[in-house]
Amino acid sequence: MAGDSAPAWAQRIRRERHLRGWSQADAVRALLAHGDASLPGREHVLRRWKSWEAGDALPSGRYQALIAKTFGTTRYAIFPGPSRPAEIAGTGMDTLEIVTRLQRSDVDAATLEALRITVDRLCCEYSYLPADQLLSEGREWLTRVADLRQRRLTLAQHQEVLALAGWLALLVGCVEYDLGQARVAEATRRAALGLGAEAGSAEIQGWAHEMRAWFALTSGDYRGVIEAARAGRAVAGEFGVAAQLAAQEAKAWARMGDRRQVEVALDRGRDALDAQPYPDNVAHHFVVDPAKFDFYAMDVYRIVGVDSVARSLAQEIVASGAAHRAPMRVAEARITLGVVAARSGELEQAVDEGSRAISAGHRRSLPSLHLAADELAAELRARFPEEGPAGDYLERVRDLGAAGSIGS
Image (cartoon, rainbow, N blue to C red; front, side, top):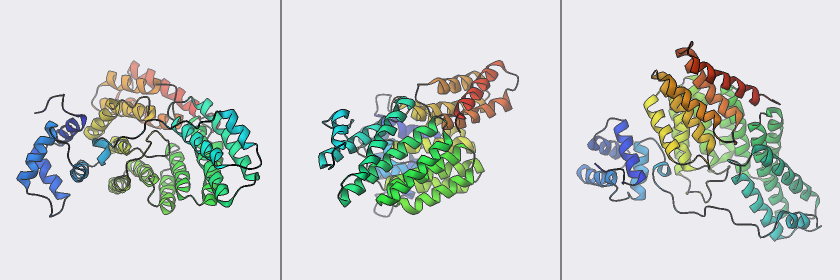
């Protein structure tokens, strides 16, 4: 057996196999069931499998996809994606210069390019910039871009300005909702949907429907999630947002107790992600990171009670080092570990994981965090009603709920 020096993807393959109680031969049989007649024989694939688990050879793209299907995830959730630039290039202009250019009667291509880069930068800062600061900057830039509609623009420039305003409205709406400003966020979301339609952008419209699904999920309107996901799917086409829409739908079905529909929605999301090329910039809030599929699956398996799989996926997320890039993802993974610990009677671990999730970082989505934290609270109330540590955690969850309801 390979040691810890094996590549992360090789260790993941081995862990997934052990989680299911499979031998290597069992895993190969499952892989072949996802393939076609062009695959080589079982003994040949078994030899390859052993070399993969040892980390001696990286599987080809074809086998990466089959391994991912065997374990119910996406290719890039296990295997490394192609190298991409880590940061967005600078605009070559500071804010003052961009604003000065925006005040001219005519808008040139360089100014629009600088605006595009600025919007992308703001979307990439979503996961870590303090919400109040991001909201202020986002609103300022949205106002500046909206004012451009009164300038002399070509048809193509007008459409570009509408799209930029649409992306900014999506971002601002997300941050408003994170801060508990639900009514304001819904109005901003509707504005983004209208801008997307006016700009002819199916992608912006798809994300506006995804936001509606997210709002509905965190408020307990699970039928509303499903309707929003279906509306988004009707316009989203082949864009990556289709995977996020499917994930929200799976989360709703899980909370409604329909396991069959959960699997249908997860399969739809997996197929949507696998159909996409690896994104240029996974830090962008409106780009679906293929590795996020583990996060979607973790949530639904926690809800339906498949604890071994939920725990394994949560451990993968925590170990991924995504605390800076995706703090909410890691926080919800810790809550998942807490839920599984509570179900196993491990009170101290459950409270510790939940407390670390609530306390982690300054960048939080209050509605999403409260939704997950309250699920752990429900487990603690049911299993440890008289225990002091559980009471401390429950009090913190009540405080979190109160903070998230401000301005709703």
